[in-house]
Image (tube, helix red, strand yellow):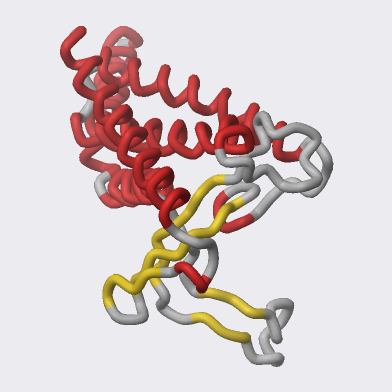
Length: 210
């Protein structure tokens, strides 16, 4: 049991380390925006350094302590995911599911570190932040440039707005995204044991009633 816990939590730790190393390298060696971007595969995949002040896809809570509330929520979510990971290991759940939750935990902590510390370490908190602590901006760098430009005016709500089809993301985001995709694709396999246990309990209850 102990070795299993160490193994799966090490996956989370590995995600955190790789994520943070990449972010530090990008911050120290690249200029922000199009001026510093590096082409990897043609024009469609490039390194593009930018910061995200809020949630995924640049969304944020638009009031003074919105970022602080978001960071505190992330801390709570981190402990909840960590506990869920431990409970899955203890129950000997499907190893694929456990790995996915470990990836999600690592990704969540990776971006949480940015929110808590980067306002101090990299001085990247927004100018109007009440404090640099807990107001750091997440560093993103991977850009899959499928399409970007102005949408036609006839499109409701979004017409005439500039939009990129794919957001800029980081290792932590990718870890969470891939894990969620695998859970959705393989959910029947991952949760089969739980379904079998529920079915077995229902069968026993029927037998007792008879």
